[in-house]
Each structure stands twice: as structure tokens, then as C-alpha cells.
Image (cartoon, rainbow, N blue to C red):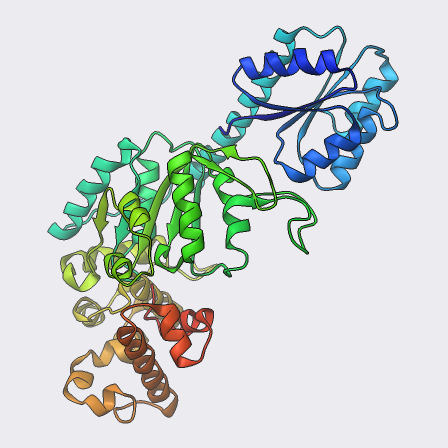
Length: 460
């Protein structure tokens, strides 16, 4: 679990000093505040896990501090301490949301014991979440690859998973980079910790620092409360940075600092927080070429690519497709509320096996999901497959006019979609795979480009 950040709140300097020394000696990060106002300011500026607060303090007491903290959206665990214990004050503290209530004189060992209990409880909650995930997913069977290319990839995953090394997964869109990242996490010693996937291309550049590293209250106009960033949420686990090539250069510098210092600084904060996070990154871009072009930091590239795993495209491992078809039909593509078992007509299977799959496994899954909805009598037939699969690639290769969408068969809508897709692919190729640049040249937003690719089933 993440290291506990503890805030000691007491108007007596000697008590603050004794308690903070004991907490620090026990291995926890600790800060102090002499009043409720100072404590609230620090809660607004820093991610605090546990607040150890005196009840009776001048101006604003500890119970009122707890209520104010809750009203501001802070979820810190509160332990209330007082020299004037009474049943009523204990009830008030518990009603306000305190986790525990203890009396002075407080022994340092007692405080440390309470913190250890909180730490253990957080660990149990994480373990329960993992167990629920395992139980809910117990019906899904892992797919066994038969192609030499994917068997080699599986061996790389098995080797690197226990090491804790940073991993860079490369390959075309839709080849299963996200699935492989999760597999590495599940085979590692961090399997009981969180797995946090992040699509770097999907987060606006103005928000990505806040999303990754968190922010303090008031760090920017809409920051009305402290936010724990995704790196803190991934502590003792794994963060998966998909589309790492889309990360702006400024953020690349800050990510490099996290890799080297193993700490993050929330936006607007003057304090850093230690994090223990394994980083797995993925890209469909040529990062070495981006380094040469000055669009990706060389030092970050070297750190991320300490261990690379290339994902082969689906067309390079056709022997996996028959088994993958059955796996996807059995486990993933059945329409919601459907209990009917599906089978594939042999002719339909032949078409699916021999299709080029430019969008790889994600395109295959989308095609199967569509076919499962259209299928009658529990059988997917050729008529249930989309035109691009039933026609294959031969017509577009032989007829470049049709490939641009100006000719070929199908409705006007299908021909327009093919023409649009050809323009998108050409723009991406001419931009050297840089989708942000391709979108700029096409005069559309990056999110629009991704949406159009996904709508055509060619992005994965």
C-alpha cells in the first residue's frame, strides 16, 4: 500500500514534536499543524491519509475541523485525541466521521499501533478488491497462442514480469498492448496492487499534469478540492501509459523525474510525495525516429525502453485466428442479455481467417460483436459480416480508384466511409505515424481523428 501521510494537529508544540518524531521513526511521512485553520490549509494543499487531531483547541476544535474537512471533500482518516474524555465527546467524534478516539496522555506506541491498523485495513480493502475482480473474472479462460510470434512474446512477458523493470510495448494499434501490460502486472509481485491504465492521447494537454500527478485546492480555476493523481493511486502497483508518444515534451521531462526520483509533486504544491510505481508504456509510433526529430526526449526513451516487447500484427500470426475467434465469441462478444451459444459458419470463418485485419484484434472483436447481433439461429454466417471482410482486400489492391473510395461496390455511404478512411490513413502515413500532426493537417481535432478511426473499425 502507499506510504501513509500523517498530519498531527495540536496547539501544544511539545506534543506535536513528540508525536511527529515517533510517527517518523515508525516509517511514516508526517507533518504538523498548530491549529485547525493551518490543518485545513495543509489538507487543501497536500494529500493527507491520516489526521491525528486534538479535540480541544482554541478558535476551532478538532471535531469542527473534521466536519469542515468532510465538507471540503477530504477523505482523510481522523483519529481524535483529548485530555478531557467524555461519552458525549466520543459520540460526537464518531458521528462526525472519526475512525478512532483516544485519551491523553498518549503513548507513542499506541499511536503507531493505530497507524499500523489503518495501514493494514487499507491493505485488506485492496486485497478484497482484487479478490472480487478474480471472482468476477473466474469464468474467463486465458487464451493460448499457437503462433511462434506470440509464443515468443509470451516468453518475454513471463521473463520480465517478476523483475519490476520498466517495459515498453510496441506495435500497431489493436495488437493487444493493453492486454499484455495487464498480463505483466498480474504475473508480477505487484498483482495485489492497483493497475491504472492511462491513454495519454485522450487527456487534454492542459489537464494531463493534474491527472497524472494530482493538484492542490486552488491550483487552477476549477480546482475546488485536492485531487490525488493517477501515480499516487497506482502506488505499490502498476501504471500503464498507453500512447506514450503523444505525451507533450514538457510532461516527458516531469515523467523522467518521476522515474528517477520516484516521487511526484502535485500541481500547486511545494511538497513532493514518494511513490512506488512500476511503469509500463506502449506506443504504435517509432519513438527512435521521434527522438531523432526532436519530438521525444532521448533520455526518457532510454529509460522506458530498458526492456522492449514488440507485439506482432494479427496478419503475421494467422494461425492464432481460429482459436481467437472461438475465444472472443465465447468470452467477450455476446450481446448483453443473450444466452444463446454462437457458432461460426465454415465459409464465414475462412473469410475472417484470411482477412488482412489492418485494425488487428480490436477490429476483429468489433466485427464479431456486430456479427453476433445480426446472427440468426445461433450461427454467424457470411451475410452477417461487414462488406470490407466479405470483399477482402483484392478489389482495393487491384483498383486504386476504388481504394480511394471513388469507385468500388457498395452503397454511397460505404464508399464515402472508405474514401474517408483512405484519407485518414494517408495523412497518418505522410505524418510518419504522428496522429496529432495528421489531425492538424486534416484540420480536425485529435479526438475526432481517433473517433473516425474507431468508427471504421481500423483503430485498435
